[in-house]
Amino acid sequence: MSITAEHHYFRDKHCDYQADQSSMEALLNCYCRDIAQPAGELSVQTGKGSQSWPQALRTRQALEAASVLQIAFPDSEDALLVLVAGNSSTCNYRYLSAPFYKSALRGWQILGLEQLARLLLNSLAERFDQPINSELYRQILLSREVMRTVLAYSQVPDGWGQGTEAFRWSEQSLSFGHRFHPAPKSREGFDTEDILQYSPEMGSGFALYFFAVNPDDLRTRGDVTDVFCAAVPTTDLDVPSGLVPLAVHPWQARYLMRQPTVRRAIRSGRIVPLGQAGPRYYPTASVRTLYKPGAPYFLKFSTHVRLTNCIRKNAIYELESAVTLSEALKNHLAPLLNQWPGFKLLFEPAYQTLDFPELAEPDRKTIAEGFGVILRDNLEQHLEPGVTPMLAAALFTEDRYGRCPATEASAALAQHAGLTEQQARVQWFDQYLALLIPPLFESLFHCGVVFEPHLQNVVVGLRAGCPVQVFVRDLEGTKLVPDRWSGNLPETVDEQTLASIRYPQDKAWKRIAYCLLVNHLFQVVACLSRGEQQTESQLWATLAEAVRGWLDTTEDPWAKEALGSLLAGEPIPNKSNLMTRLFKRPDRESQYTLVPNPLAGIANTPHPEQGAQPDV
Image (cartoon, rainbow, N blue to C red; front, side):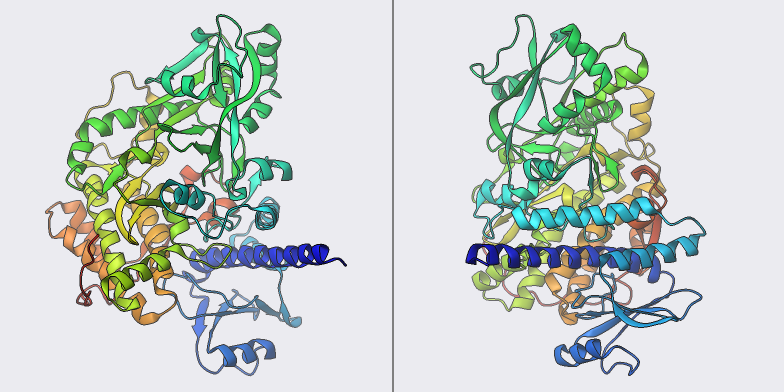
């Protein structure tokens, strides 16, 4: 074997191992948090283990001073063990081994992803008295294959640089995806070539695809002319006289040209394919939303690909609600949010698509949803001097090199301010919460605006390692609580769009509790604490103080009830991605489980000493 061939062989083996291990960790995370912990079937044991455990696990436990996570299964003597760095009240474990499994008929065996997935899906089928979900099994394995491709061929570097260059790489660095989704990289509709061309994790960029269309067939809200005129190089496109160019994602263009309705329009000359042209755009973490440095807008295209839970298309009501909410929030919420200059919303002021109103509804819908694109404000216009923006999902997650940017940032704070590493992490978190908590709680409890601030919808601006700005994006999941929202909505809003925007109060708190607390801040604490129990306790105490600090500023009964229960340690609503996929539900019908509240027992703990404040 040549040196080059040997290098590729070991690289591929390492990529396969990383993909397998990460896929198993995500599946175990889901099962532990959504099933085993609520059912009382999960325990973590430190110290000397049982003599009945496998010798390989007991040896590693002794050498690494690690803990053993044990999952029991109902109505059986079966057991699953895996080595972890320590206990976690939020089921955010740092795994140190593959899982070991023993059944009544067979001794201990090490499981790979296929065996683990079959075991857990069989158990869930018995638990809920339903057939085994073979579709989810395929999605789990597909997700792993996407990870393998990403890890083998990604061009994302281990150093991201500064400014908008770092932002681009942070968007494209999520090799492993959502840590609490059973199939975090599943992409049904993408083949291997598509992954290499269009997946953000490749570090890729590409030109947009253009069709020529009759301007009378365009359906728009807001001013979309300037951005698309700037994206079209007149020397590269031969646009027939009387027609105008319409941009789509290049993968979507190929999909659209296979649809009978579009093919008929092409044959008649009503739609003319022009091809790819113009500057390079870069896919962000959502895959379908594209970024070009210096452009005024992100472009959120339809792509008929099932990514994790959903087919990522822009339904008409989603196009309408994005612009409707942007107008309403600009008029009625933005002035209030100005009191927190470090908090910015990225509005979606316009959309563009095609509309053939004479067609029957299914065909008209195919056209309108297939060609839709939403314009979202580029955060560059809001960046303060010297600030580097990073996607929260990348900032608070280890990348494929084992690097966690948030711990690097807090280390820079420690050096700059003369703090210990633990002090710096707690202070960093305190400053981050000061940017995030007050405007989100003010928007929810006083204005009835329900944002969706999960890790992929938040961008964090860092200066000298310290968080100084927060950007919240993607109005698709933003809702209004009618009894709380005092602003106006346009009279022209149709009923379907209005129904998609409105949200009852009980669901509003569930959404914020999951997105902000479970999805977002649970991961931040896991990242900053690195399994150190003392640091983790101080971080939870810091969160409790931030919540209590805002609660002291209001007399709102809903806020007193919801946040009072949180501080009292009551369980927190958690959106179960495992249950959603298991029962094949759409996201809007996601099931919530309750997870233990890490503030229980420490909500009244005094805030730890912070040390000197850095000059940021």
